[in-house]
Image (tube, rainbow, N blue to C red; front, side, top):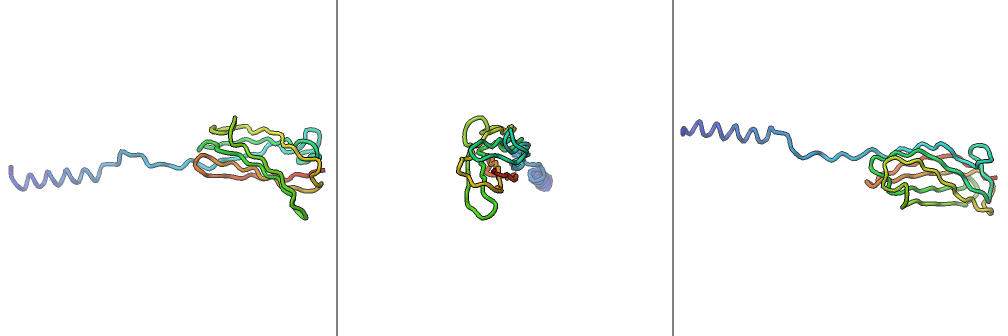
Length: 140
């Protein structure tokens, strides 16, 4: 075979190797969780209010393309205090799912000081990404 023809074929074959797209798919990170708080408060009080010694009704729609790993709720006093309530959900019906209707009742201890509180609802997915939604709560 002619040396020029062989060299040309070899050149075209090597060029084709670089021009072909990769067969491996690039890993795409799923979107961060999305949280929409739909209800906060007591069933027998106006939205955003709860009496000490009762339970706080908390409802939210959650979408986590990376699947839910954990949900954390933190309620802390806004001003002039350091009272805090924390609750975590790391197993059960919310973990490992993409879409969840979060519906829980969180006990507000009878000794919780009355006043304005701030609620943080944080969802962390299995990729380690997290999103926090916030709401105001008044303890009476």
